[in-house]
Amino acid sequence: MKKIILASQSPRRKELLAQAGIEFQIITSDVEEKITHTKPRDIAESLSSQKAEDVYHKLIEKYGEVEARNFLVVGADTIVAIEDRILGKPVDRADAYEMMKLLSGKTHQVYTGVTVLTMSEDKKPHIHTFHECTDVTFYDITDEEINQYLDAGDEWADKAGAYGIQATVGAKFVKELKGDYNNVVGLPVARLYQELKKILDEG
Image (cartoon, rainbow, N blue to C red; front, side):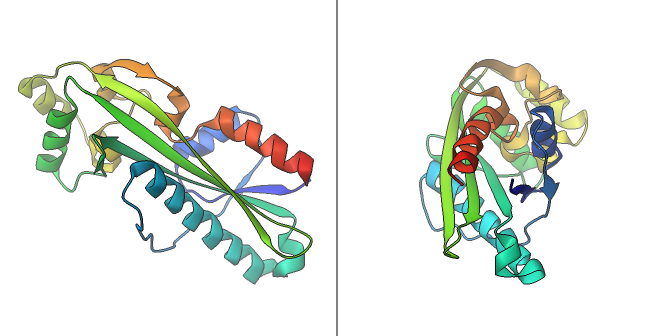
């Protein structure tokens, strides 16, 4: 059985994997991410692949190519987009305010790209990448509500799109969600579980 490595320091992804009963270890990626695509789904997939490959190279450096075959690396990256415009983490309060104004009363997309990387007996990497997309619709939000939200704490500071959906103040603005809820949290864990079963069965 291959040992699963999560190439992420996200506490939300860690929690989701643990809740699913998947045993794993964490090795974080420090790769300098390069955006080489324009569509959000392609960017999410590409960034997840960059993280997974970076961590796998670390495993090879530490254990060697033969021992590294015993590991399976999972990389993930989540992107918030509206009308194909990507909303990253806000640089400051004013930026977060503009993001919330933009999301108010509209439907946006949350993409999570996931890459599963293993090494075969022929020493060739097997890279399996996919993405999930969830539509999230916000209620209309008043300027006063946005200011109250931003003043209530700093949860918006490290969240793409300036909000988080899980047990946060920003969750109260979510009107409707179509797709995988966990995908919005940061990892489509059910889809990942199914993909892992296929890969491990084949291996």
